[in-house]
Amino acid sequence: MAAAVSNEDIAAAFEEMADLLDIAGDNPFKIRAYRNAARTLRNLPREAADLLQAGEDLTRLPGIGKELAAKIRELVETGQLGALQRLHRRVPETLEQLLQIPGLGPRRVATLWHALGIRDLRQLERAARAGRLDGLPGFGPKTVQRILDAIREQRIKDRRFLRHDAARHAEDLCRWLQGAEGVERVVVAGSFRRGRDTVGDLDILVTVRDGTDVMDRFTRWPRVAEVASRGITRSTVYLRNGLQVDLRVVAPEQFGAALAYFTGSRAHSIRLRRMAQERGLKINEYGVFRDGENLADEREESVYASLGLPWIPPELRENRGEFEAAREGRLPRLVTRADLRGDLHCHTGASDGHGSLREMAEAARAAGLEYLAITDHSPHIGVVHGLDEDRLLRQLDEIDRLNDELEGITLLKGMEVDILEDGRLDMPAAVLERLEVVIGAVHSHFRLGRKRQTARLLRALEHPQLNLIAHPSARLIQRRDPIDLDWPRFLEAVAARGCLLELNSQPLRLDLDDLHARQAKELGIGIAIDSDAHGPADFALLGEGVLQARRGWLEPADVVNTLPLDRLRKRLRQARG
Image (tube, rainbow, N blue to C red):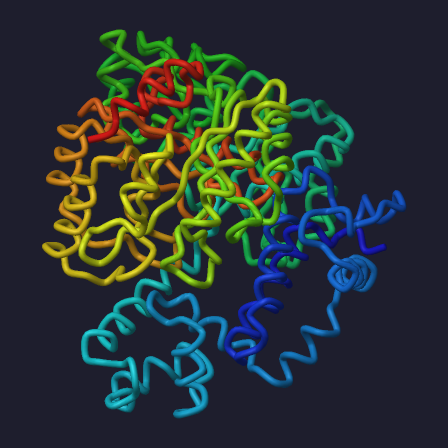
């Protein structure tokens, strides 16, 4: 088997299949199956290649039937997918570039391809500037200008990767390097360690004993596509997906200074060096020096202690007040994954998920949760197979039956209800009164102007049953820009109303972002860190949301799903209008 083929590689191939089939106008159920399978693979705790080698049946995985299991085996054994190669003969793979432009879905991409023969970003830019898009259905002047703006931004975004996607490579590479002779410590630093939602590269620090072969092992990692440079203490490679990885070997006594130096943002590091200079010290990646004497050691804490400061958590190192807080003893006790007792947002197979009520409940319990809100979609967006009133009421009865049977987990009755263009909720108030968790969410009309979009959310807040707003900016990182919202006005209204806001843990969302999460905290708004799970494996994503929350300075008291169930229910009731 081709051990170098990871779950991320297989998921990327399945996502590519789904995108190209979508452009080709293929069966939507087949497209959805590929996307669900990609999600399953990204959240598997073990590599599919290892499962196959152990003789395990992949069809036991959520959303993986015989046909998809065969394709996974084909990818693992050959590194290629015949179906994808055949699809490339029908649909140019360069069309996938166009899908990364906000507002260009499969239908518009298909229009560009069939009407104008546009196959890539360069052709699209030329056609837009030449006025060739004028008159095409769905391509008004504002849309064309947004396309040109997005192409310019895309050149920057292409150099960054979702942290979640980079994490699998980082974790696997660290394990690989631990196998090198003489290696003692392996740590990923940089923006990855700070928990940024995207990363431009990976900075890995290693301490070793004499006689190490770590550089040889690093450059021989099976996922390396190109060795850009190789030295005794530093090497740089590019992985097959284009991600740059820098490896630095440091002496054990230099490790604390190197870790601090390569973790902090540029602004944080500049401030750190300036503070050192004021004390007559010099800080660099090798240590903290006074008259040639190194005051730091292998511990990162020693670097901050040399400046009279406590250790500052990596997620806070952005020069956003962390130095003042450290000096005044106000650093937050940041929330951890262990603090979460429940999850207020998940989907089942009744809408667009792929797990039953029982399966989701048991998976949540296995993830260490005590309660789980079932919040399938309302019917407004047809593609997610939302529940109408009758189906919802039947689901509520089933939740009652399961709560009588299950031990160690309690299901809460809820729904994710669309906030319509005019701010109304997509479900009668009489039905919503029966629910404990009513989540309002924007799933359409993303391009409304600031005034209309803000008015839309403010009207939704007036609904007496609403107690939580999901993924408030509606962004999809690197795929869809946030809605244009008057954030100060919106957050003030949320605080005055007592409503809750979600920090959605899905890697493409991480919404609230870190800045808005901190603003919400300062206004006293309760925040729910939710998985938005669409299958049993997705509860593992809660850690992604916790990391974002830590960047927003959130403490356990700021997060409502750290509360025990009785207090959580009281808080949910208080959050209603």
